[in-house]
Image (cartoon, rainbow, N blue to C red; front, top):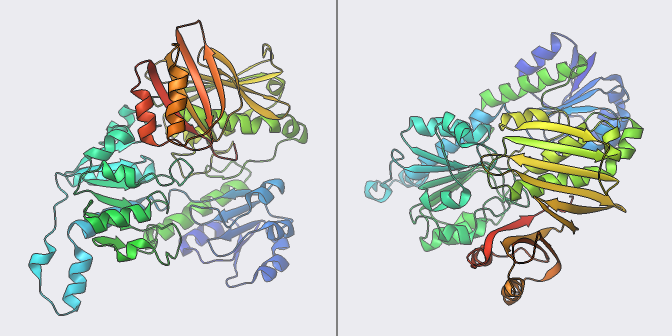
Length: 527
């Protein structure tokens, strides 16, 4: 077969491809030139500059696979590729060590004040006393996100005699212990850390994860590191905290906008800033090239690639039948991820009624995508969903039945972890999603982008008190659902809100005597 590489990748990757197929390396072509020649090729290799858009994919009438030599696939039109039956693969693990080592390097640079000391020397100065640093040995490092990069950092930090704690809702304490990490909640992690590094994707849930309110809970000598995604840390809040002396230092490799023109971090003291170098090592470039080449060969040989980032086509009949339930499955997964208090060891997905007659693998993938979206940078689809769940220690069970009870269709997700199982069920009515069950409570709820859920003792005045508190905080309630078993026993109240309530408001509600538990749930708009 013929493979077209339109951007430079390491020679090692090209050599792997050339052992099996004909490879043409045509660099510096315009979009029009690529479209002119691409009908002759079975595979296309890109990095980050060439945009494999719908026009280019449509022109590639022989295309079987597009390989992106890197992690993200923003420059590939996934929808067009999927519709054209073209598999898109990437290389999500090739830069793991590079990103981990860059993070460790920034830790040393910040702790020992290497950048300002170097600048001082180049000015002809010799001011040793101004650049006294701190040792990393004995410090507590907090890792937010314990995926491949987080685990690699943990192993290296342990070798540096640091105490390592971490938070990740889909890693168990036993798994964390295997790489030397004490698993804690994010709320517990913040005040304990001397250094905090984030390794999570930017989503609606993680955007601004490190903000002014969180900084107020940190130690005054804390140092912050972002080698993950711009926007996970609030740049203005970090800059303000540095200028006021509230925190000791910060190092950023990624930014809200890149290049970060006008970033408040430029004028902040005690910073180390690098231009998105996390994956920029010679070794990482080789590893990425080799990884993407191996993926391309898998697809060209007719096998499933481990890191395919789009789903293969399903039959038109199955697509029509399943399509209405895909957003519901993702909503249930995202909802359940925030509702469950412990990392699920088993996720059971029950499919009842009409969709049970068809291949439900895309429904399972959609549910897992919602469940895992805030904890992995990898795109979750029916090719890799089971693998990603397994890597997180989650056993996935699929059940089908024609009996959906009073509904024409019903999807039920059951998460089983260390505590009691958490159950969430929903259906689609006239094209609209409805939540029909939360644990043992029946309900009829239209999911909203922001929801507040309380589990409380059913007492007069409780609902009114919560409503008044939200009103005083200028948080508007757009809808309310109450579910209870019997009067004056336990009940669930679900409030759809126009705004996300501040953590202090949620804490105040949780402290209210009749309230047993409270959840602030946020769903992405596409759900």
